[in-house]
Length: 180
Image 1 (cartoon, rainbow, N blue to C red):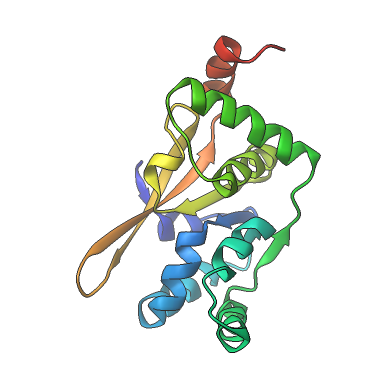
Image 2: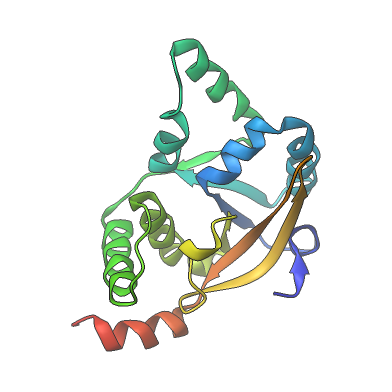
């Protein structure tokens, strides 16, 4: 991991699609004063798009206490200009394969994280990345950490990582576990 997210994103001459994990959405809403500039800086490059999955939104919205709270959460996401990618058969197949590989390695994550990994696999050749601070959910045996984003909160510091899917690493793991 050699770059910070800003240098990677702002220097790109090609479209970049950044899948946002639930933790990024939650942190951005809970700490708007910290994330407003981060989001603006990432979107300065007009080739950058934030994307996510409908399952991420469900995970994000499920903490709503009532309709008013839900409305606030929906409105809080507007500055991200999120594109929502539907979970299709390819993503489900990829997610299932990841679940099997993770299980064989003694790892289990949320269904949403399997879907995010599956989506990243599907769109990896389209300059897609994923931004998350759940470092253990996307193992380096399959995913590469390509850049980082450090967010200094009042009481702690969190490091978000920009992940990419590494097909070579995946095939190496899959051939040992998956029956083709």
